Image 1 (cartoon, rainbow, N blue to C red):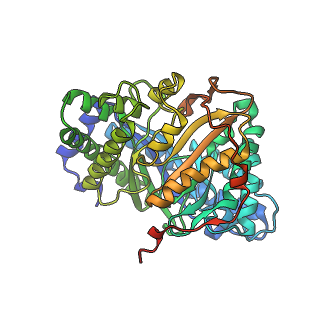
Image 2 (cartoon, rainbow, N blue to C red):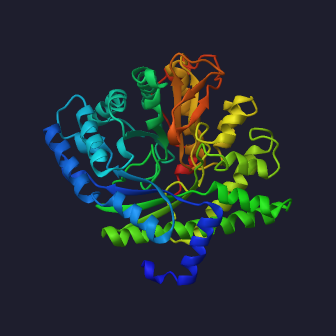
Image 3 (cartoon, rainbow, N blue to C red):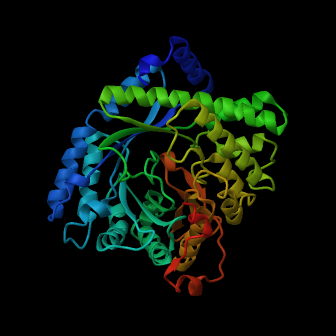
Length: 456
């Protein structure tokens, strides 16, 4: 479908919606395959990756700005995702991939994107030498670069959960926090641990270019919690069926806007259009909050009883609206609940209404998982690993993507605040259980795939 197949009336309606409801395109992400950049010399591989990213993404930022100007639709972020670097760098005999991260960071700065995702490994059933080297490189790579993001997939419904990798990621997060202690452990905000990771996610920090993806592709991430909030407030005290219908209609409009922008970018750049990810991704700005949506449904404060049910209704309605609007909805489409990036979540966590355990319960029905949560800096690596295992189990059993992006803030204790700035926001340090999980995590091995995996 080309942009020309959108009627003038539909374009005008979309623009009016943007103007009245303060919508935006959260990100245009160009996925780039680096599979042809492998080389026995890591410096050569890094140079090839740098050159390819700079060539293909040269006009990405300018194109986003042109679309914003032409259609009157703000395009907030322009980003790049690449093939998991563990796959690209493995043909070298390097014992660290930090050099590759530095090349990626240089490329991101050269083309002007704010983040580049794909310093990643897929280890759901075990680790190769390249996977182990990549994971060992994460702390230094995230501490010495500005725009590189990392992710590791440690489980799937089909494979089960690699508990050796889970334990290793607990230690990796602790070390990443230590190396970025001067910035409240900021490196951990650029690191995601997944179960059932998707290959076409345009959102950071978890984006990577999957091995089943084309040579180059454009994926669009659309948000709009403010628009959903205003629609709910306008409807007033309706029943749940009417409430769901209101959210679906709003999600439909948002998704159409995303596809319009994605296909425009595709045509301008000469790159295939991939998917539009409709995820209600909040920001620290007032009125751009998923928590406020749940409270508009009738909860005095997010985190109280009923929050999980409210989030389930929201997530389901968003997906249904998106599916009706486009045949190419993908990524993680749904609702995100990152604490530091959502003013309503920050307030609820600060006053004790939203606890860590309640957040975990809500991840059973949200788009991803435990996201941008600050915890005490002295939290043991085994406790962090156990948190990852719990979240991965939810994803594995329910055949959904779950993830953990958690920040053990060095020197901070429960009740303190950490400041990340910009889109990453600020977060209260939340309490975690102090009882040890060491004996559980030290068992090692792999949690077997559940019965749900036997569906062929």
